[in-house]
Image (cartoon, rainbow, N blue to C red; front, side, top):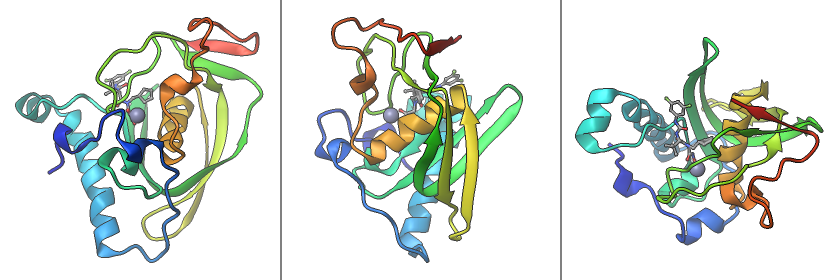
Length: 182
Ligand code: UDB
Ligand code: ZN
């Protein structure tokens, strides 16, 4: 099973590379990677398992965070009574709102051990196109918190870290078209 030690930390070159698209059908190895990623997130949200192995409760994970530069992401969380559970291959934002958003309290990252303060300003709504494990095309629209998680993970596939979106002159700057998520 994957543990925190398997997650590469800020400064590792894999986090700054653009990851490669994955071809179908997925190899046995690629399928195992996606399953291991999902199991890691599920384990990290299980109180007993997380405590035993000292896992941070994760909502999403991207393959580059394991030092593997392939376009795979996994997300798993509940938000407003809806379950967001996706293993996505080659996800791409195909459209987005003009309106922006940011999480009250900022963001963290499983690959960043320090706390970095500031507003991480992102699109309020996105539509993504991706493929599931079997190569079926999926199109999904996300808004609010789920849209933030998706953008955070897709950023990892492009070598972008959450703090790249924080205004350098004023970390708490709020653009006029941005609304907060409490
Ligand atoms: C996370 N978890 O997984 F609101 F029960 C973060 C970490 C970095 C703090 C582990 C998280 O936000 N958990 C959470 C939030 C809740 C309620 C709850 C658990 N990530 C994923 C990541 O680093 N992926 O690369 C960071 C998130 C910050 C905003 C979106 C992703
Ligand atoms: Zn992250």
